[in-house]
Image 1 (cartoon, each protein chain N blue to C red):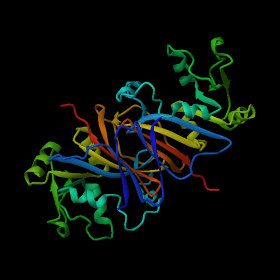
Image 2: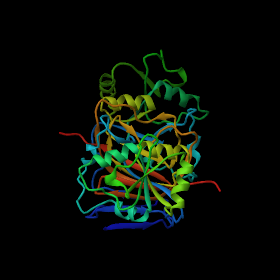
Image 3: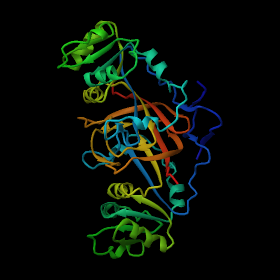
Length: 205
Length: 205
């Protein structure tokens, strides 16, 4: 069996990149998220302390900054937005954040000009965001990602997998009306332990 | 960021093997199984036709024969046993198969000497099998794998992931009483599309 074995000798990451599959779409909806081996984005108590189970060097972002550079705006649900607001940090985004909510009345004054409330069905919301000139979107938050997937509106997924079975929690994926094929764009191993896979939706034309 | 990019140029598979993490245990319980990206081993109708979604050359077994060489016996549930019996093929195993069942009265005459009925709790069953000299066991079948995982009795997992979201079906993993850490032993890409990861249970000593 012809295969190539690479030994880890001081590399921070090793990558298998597959042909010229990088996405060059004008409009795209992407996710960039970490999960456990059993597909959870938060543990049984909603916690993410397991993300600290692997020591990640401070200067290593696992492609996050490059990914953020490549997108025009973020789209997230109210729960994720309020979670980020609750973090005791400066606002972490330099791109506009569109907050999906049918209950939130308005964006807090502190974050006006950074975050924008959007309402309606996903196609209507996307049309509004695209018309503002934001085409390459980072879709974030468990519920929002699942809503987009249900409508087959996710074009690429960059998923970092931690080698841990949490045994319960908040799932990244949920029931879908139909199966969906993806293509593998790249497979990486970071720090000997973390897997990062880049998938692209394979649509029949 | 120092990473190595490998272009696929006619390789059937590319592999990242991590240090000397191959299992050299005397006794071990292993799984070798294929799942969808969302962690299903069978689709909503119990089907596995999605395993044919990627064209796999006839002479390529993705490490299966080497894995089978390395084990002493199989342990599977009654449902999996009866599913294999129902296939219109010759008995596919050259190693003894231990069938877990509390309802099955006896192994059909056609398969006596190849398959053996075992009953009781997992530790009792394992003790019996070990005493017969079979130490390296291939644990197969969804329910059986989940029972072993619940008792933290799985030592290594070789999981082949197909880049498809099935959106429902039979999950490989189920609820666990506690989180479990694994180590990555090897990460492979087969035929440009299939991921195969080899994990080893990381236990605190």
